Length: 287
Image 1 (cartoon, rainbow, N blue to C red):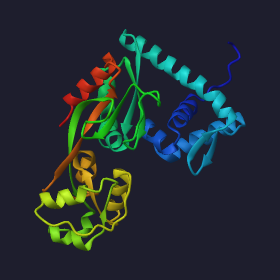
Image 2: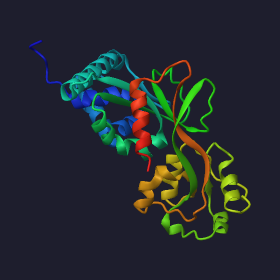
Image 3: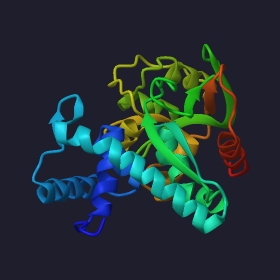
């Protein structure tokens, strides 16, 4: 085709990720840019094409008719480009691994290490889709999913990646020194009601009555804790960067392990060479 227009490849890639993720925030995580950068690229593309691609609704992004027409074409095209580049650069057949990842693990462990995985396995295109620990692998078109828990899910084969001991984290200026100090602060809670009671038991104290807000995201709890708006009980390995940067402090050595991170597939599937490679690489890079 000799009359191709100037093709805004970066904006088109941003569109494909946002459409697949259904969220500018999750698209920003996958692309490792800011949400504002994603919004800017989509706005630029909509202006260039003269159409609206997304409707912003309280439930998330919804593709317009124009967006629905573009999405499958962009998805196939970018997959083809990724496979072609991998073949050229490595001489190997390219493979795509569609992986669902619980958001805390994605941002706290996997994404900061992805460059290493890409160098080790240039023929594997790893396509991430984040979730809040509730995921249906087959229905969502995934090859595998990383989730947090006991490793026991009905109909699921689980392969251990790493344990996630939990401990209280808070802003440095709260100056928490003794376990009894926690009683005068807001204790942020997740939907798993047993976490604080089990941590207090491990610390040798009686858990106070819990009245703090319940959040469905460790990242949300961490954001509130950084602002000094409460104390969060969080999986410590996922927040090492925030601790090292001084945004959060760990006032107590006591921790409690209530779950681990697992690579999971349906029992009626077999592990592919790509999922085996990812699991082997992740286990080799657990600190």
